Length: 110
Image (cartoon, rainbow, N blue to C red; front, side):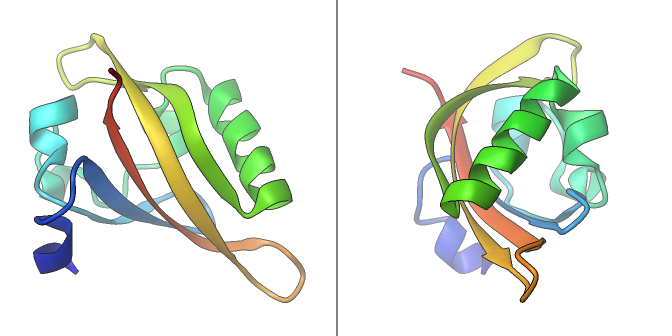
């Protein structure tokens, strides 16, 4: 997957049903300051989003619509500042409608 993500803009990631990052491409370091290996296992809600309530809002919207399009989000930068980004993601669901994983991309806002 990393060969594909190098051709696309932004940070591409995959998270499991619990919101833990299982894949992220190398661009993460240039945008939020974390090395890719350090980001694996990071929980989006508790460790990446500046405001965990925003993660809950995004997750619920993703469950309802199956995708997120051009959503402004605030993530924690490694240096402690806020990284304002734009999220686009699709959700893969199980038979009960729960999230199996999410695959998406974030890029710096215009």
